[in-house]
Image 1: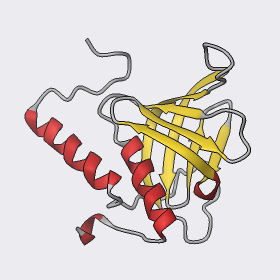
Image 2: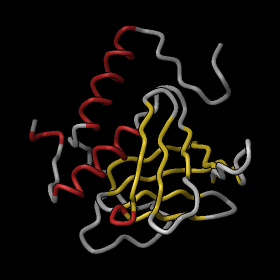
Image 3: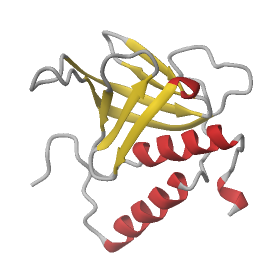
Image 4: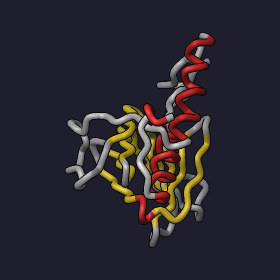
Length: 152
C-alpha cells in the first residue's frame, strides 16, 4: 500500500507523465511558477521552478542513527536556492553554498552546505518531481544557464 501522503502512479499515463517530467526537470528544462507564496523575499532575478506541498526535512547527524531534527513542510526550488518552510522553521540553502548533493528518484534529495557539520535530507512523496527540479536548477545555476520547457 501507499505510505501516508504518497501519490499513486496507478495508470500508464500518470507514470509516463511522471517519468517525462522527471527527466525534463533533471536536464534543466524547468517550469516557471509565480513567486506569490514564496516564504522569503525573492532575490533580484530569482525564478521559482518547483514547489512541493509536503516534504519531510531531516537535519542528519551521522554520529547517531537517527536524524537530529525532523520537520514536515513545503519546499521551493528556485533558480538560485532551495527553501524549506514549516510552521517551526524556514531554511534557505543558496546553490553557491552547496558542496555536495545526492538525488534519489524514489525518496528525495540530500544537500550538504559549505560549513555545515552534517547534511540535510528532503524526503519527498512518491510521484513528486521536486528532487529532479532541484538537480536541474542546481545544474543550470552552476552552468550559468536558464532553460524553459519550451527550449527542448
